[in-house]
Length: 159
Image 1: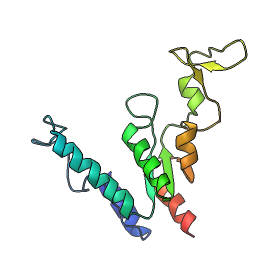
Image 2: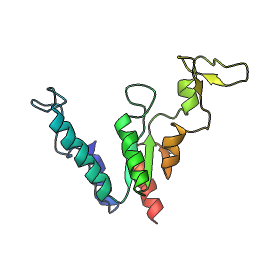
Image 3: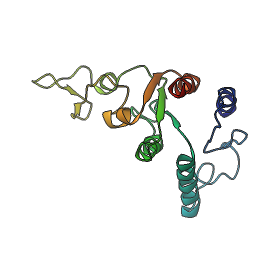
Image 4: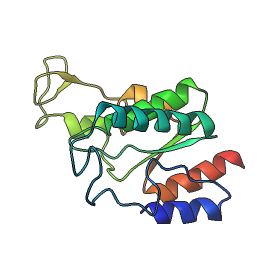
């Protein structure tokens, strides 16, 4: 997938900055924090490298497809917020075509006033967005599709 992203970026005149080089797999022996326990200084290095990439880039393309649950990856959300705070445009994409309230509402459960309720009994926001309002509003564009669709949307923002 990373090689596909790099190739698409080159086609449209972008330079891909990826947290993991396209030629490197994390599923191999000796990867700190993945195939063996990581150390605090390894986590610090990853954190700083990701921040440096966000600071140096012109825009961020972010995958907000639900990850390990019903919400986007927390690290991706942090990167979106950081990019937004730095004034960088964010184009997000999701492979999940459901809206937030469609993912979270528990069997159509509602309060007496018609608010949807999640499995834990909390109210569910309904803004017809694919993710939490704070994440969605930080994005210039959200694409229901893959990373190539998002890169195409980014290219259209520039034109």
